[in-house]
Image 1 (cartoon, rainbow, N blue to C red):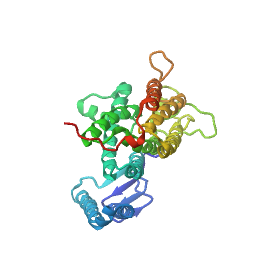
Image 2 (image 1 turned 30 degrees about the vertical axis):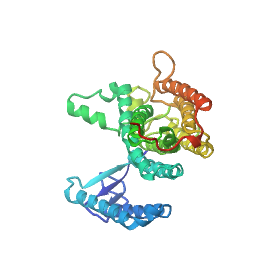
Image 3 (image 1 turned 180 degrees about the horizontal axis):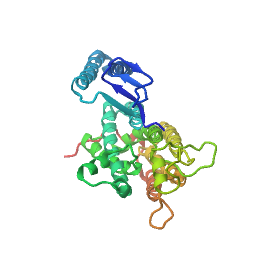
Image 4 (image 1 turned 120 degrees about the vertical axis):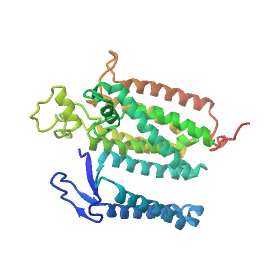
Length: 361
């Protein structure tokens, strides 16, 4: 676990201090170095895209210059106007960013094969990211509100507790629900066939889950139950699992670390990457639009249902012996199975399902 990966400092724009400071003994990187790295990444990605698109090749220098100007301009504003001179870069946020970029880029390659522009994928990816975080956080607050607001005494503290993700606090199914609603609204506005685009982005969603669960490991959330296996992990004092176990009386205040726990975040991450591979393979051989979505809707609930048995942060609901995520998984699995059966019986062949729908008068 490592909530803070490194710090970006404005005091020394091109500084590099691996030891950090006395109160922050973690790598400090100057803002200038970060901007240079971003510019190199932007140039590399722009060149890669230009090699695969005639339009992008013609606009390569213009787009590169515009993106570079935006990056440098934003960096200059931060340097000149920010009252904070040191910014932490959290492991969870970094993995969300890596997952977002990797997933959207991968989806863009599939999108052009069905006649959907890459730019559309980036637009829907940004929408799903924002809606997913809001939905996942809302679902967590609904499920664990008593824990989040336990010591809150005023409105300001309530607002801070609501948005504070460093203590853990996203439930994936909440993000899926709000993300799905936002997705269908997006498709209706852009007149894009929702099943075609869903097949394009489904493998990337699972890739994003794979990276996001690594972020959970950095953050310490979504932790596992007691484990005696050789690969069990322990979390340090002050971490989310340590604090939760301390409050429940499983460890004493003088304990140096948590109990050995299942690395449920790693299990979930591996499951996400495996499902990304499976659904990407289905995409290559699909016969009807929506098949990739259906396969994902069947296999992800199975994965989540099984992992819940080794999670330590979820409790059973309504005397069922199952967690809320397991109950939701049963519903998603049933819906996915019914949808796949309907699709195979009544769905149109892929050749009769255009990527874009016609406007109706």
